[in-house]
Structure formats: structure tokens, C-alpha cells
Length: 312
Image: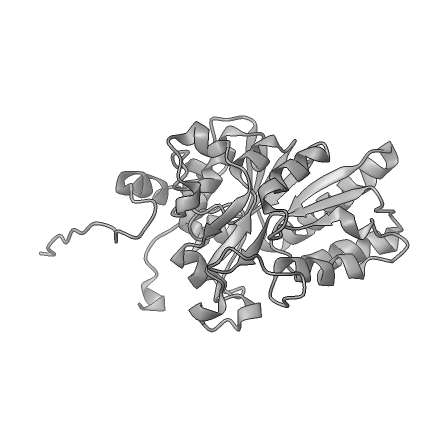
């Protein structure tokens, strides 16, 4: 007869509520979209659809705001190559972007709190300019000073900068392995607060990255996809929870896999973010309280259980 074997989660794991984890582990793909908050709309979509939906949403918001004669303010995530598709579609449709204001949600920093400059080739602003801004037809581009990112000079006023533009119309996001939103980490001392309300009112700042985030990002193509933990800076600048709360709308995307394989650390954290307790220990869980559209890929929604044919 098999003997039971019990253990506690490692002490460095931020969210350690085993009862809550056991509960969300049981959530099947078929039940993923059910939620008590009718303004928190969850959809499970084919893996190949989500990228194009994001492209379409960005282009539509830029087009509609331009036609209405108003600015559009976007909080934009890690600048992946999908921004090239946004730029090319804007070019093809000849959509003027002079009214567009973007705010990158985060940027790497070093242990001294110095934020990576735009010239650093592994930085997010460098990539955003490379994949989006310079890909736009020059006659369609917004003024370059309307493309914002956290810097050593502006980080203490970054949240106010977003508000000075009338606040964000849309905040795009997607959880990291820790459940972080942007680089709002659950185990960063800089985001320690007395309670959920105080935490949700915190503004942009530099914070220490979780070891799990370093491991996740060491698998990014820019860092060689080889687990080089020393290649990833130890700190980051990030928007605060209040910037997400203040946005008029939010779209949260759960579709990350390891180089398009079936391996995904997101299956558990997606369930915690969507259906676990709302807590700073799972930062993206705060979206459960807000008007949010959540897009989950079929791969991320797959049922969780042992896959013995894959071995250990």
C-alpha cells in the first residue's frame, strides 16, 4: 500500500496557501470562464487567435479615437514582436497615430536602482521603439515624446504622468510565473503594504525582481533561452497597482508556453489569478475586482494533472 508523504511549500514561494492551490488545481477547462463578477469576462480561445485579437484591439482603439478627435492612452506590456504586426496594419490602413500616447508598464533596473537606458539592446523601451515606433510610417507616427517608458529621472512621477494624460484608456497585461502584473512582484519589499486597499493604491517604483521572474525571463529569446540567470537584471521599474485600477479598461492575456511547446508554467498561476483569493501575493488577482476582459489560450486552460508519458 502506498504511503502518504507530506511536505510544506518551500519558504521562498510567495503564495503558500495549499488549500487555495488545491482548489484551483481542480478547475477544468470547461469551467474556466465562470466567475461571480459579471464585469470580469473570461474567454478561452484557440492559441493562434489571441495574438491577432490583441493586434485588432490596439488598431481599433487607435482608429476609433482618431475618428472621434480624442487622444488614446495605452499602458503597454513587454514589447514582443507582435507590435510589428500592429505597426504594419496601421501603415496598410494609413491610420494616423498623432493622437497616440503609450506608457510602457515596466523596464529593467540594476541593484542601485538605475533604470536601463533606451540604448540598452535588451531593454523594453529599446524593443518598443524597434518593433513598433520605427516600424510605423514616419508620416503616421506620434511625436516621439508621446512614447513613454520608466526612466531613472521620471520613475517617481511616472504614475502622475499617466494621469496627466487623462489616465490610461486601456491597460494590457499578462501574468508572470509569480502572478506579477507588469513587474509588481508578490515578494518585493518595495510593494509591502498593510492591507489590500493600501497595496492597490501604490504608485510606480523600482522593485526587486522575484527569483522566479529571473528564471522565467532567462528563457526569453533575448537572453538566449538557456537559463542564464545572470543575464537578467535583478531589479525593475514598474507601474503600480493604482495605475491598473485607474485605467478605463483592462485586457489580461494568458497564453505563454515554453517556445510554443505544451510546457507552460502559466496553467496554475492562471487559475490562481482568475479564481483564487484576491491578494498582493498574486498581484494579477486584483483584476477580479475590476472591469476586465481575460483571454486564456486553450493551452493555458488545459486540465492539470500528471503526464507520466513525459517522464520527470
